[in-house]
Image 1 (tube, one colour):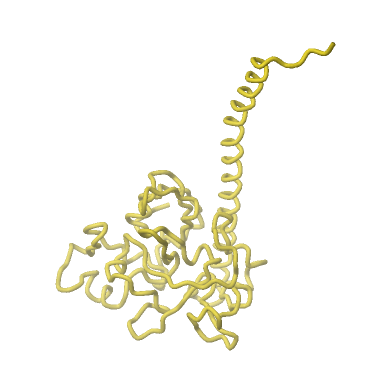
Image 2 (cartoon, one colour; image 1 turned 30 degrees about the vertical axis):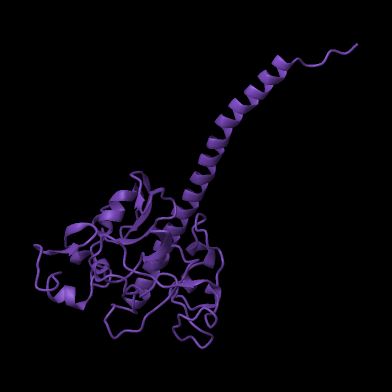
Length: 270
């Protein structure tokens, strides 16, 4: 007569399976995340090469890294119904890259190429102190048209938590200050903080004006863009861990501390 498993034996097997699962699943998750990071780093490296080719051809860097949202006639739009998909929008770097997927981080939760969003200046930058004014075209002058971006484009904008919802922050621009800030050495409302500015969330900050991409000969240590889709958060605040992937004008792609990028993104050095 066949002998079945005893209760103790069954419980032992179940316990072993549970232990193996506890070991294997986190390792598998880490492997997947490392693969996503590697792809993100590869994307940024290819974008850097395209940027340098663009600079050689036009002697300047483009206003936008991926694409502004446009309608079927090529006009800027923030109308979701009128906007063409990301793959149909004109891109300054389009002819230098093999496909649009290079603009997409695999951790970006929005893979729909039609979704468009408003973007705001990130915390830690001078223009964040203006409140909730959306990004405007080019140098951001008050009379410049408002622009919207494609949520798919992971390196022009980044999605971050804000209260019970989320917003999109700018990740690439030629100027991280506006005309008023440039003319007044980064002071506003008659109040000057050395050669810097005051951010209500962060406090006094120093200026780093020379490292802006819009200048004729920007410093090669300038931050080109950074990916924040690998972060972990405590509420609205990123945890201290090397989860932000930063592209510098040197061509270096570096994984840096997320909290440090959150507090002073443009002060980061390669």
